Amino acid sequence: MTYMKNYLEYLADTELKRANGLHPAFASAHESWAVLLEEIRELSSETHAIEEMHQLVFTDVMQDRSARDGIACVYETAIRAACEAIQVAAMAKKYIAMEEMQH
Image (cartoon, helix red, strand yellow):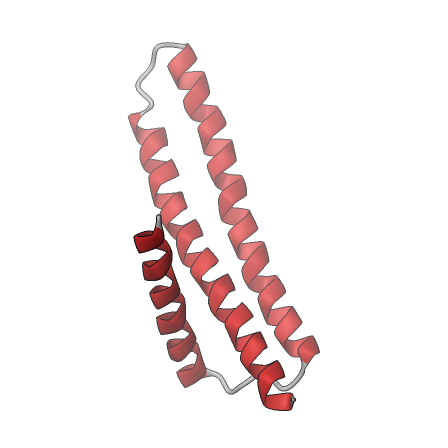
């Protein structure tokens, strides 16, 4: 678990560097809150989709049908969710950096 956490922190730092190259520092706490909210909602949307797909997989399993395609969708959506989670972490770190610069 430590290896994964360290790697995810590296990915969040990499995403933050990429985002900082495209967008300036947050101008205010309000702006950073709004950007973070957008990323959180995107993450929530992906996790909600995983839950819905998992329920469809359950239906297939209970009816003795192949769930392979549904599980493949869960996999792809989980990867997208992980990307969104990394963006949430990056924007949270950008917010922290903004506050540190102000104080």
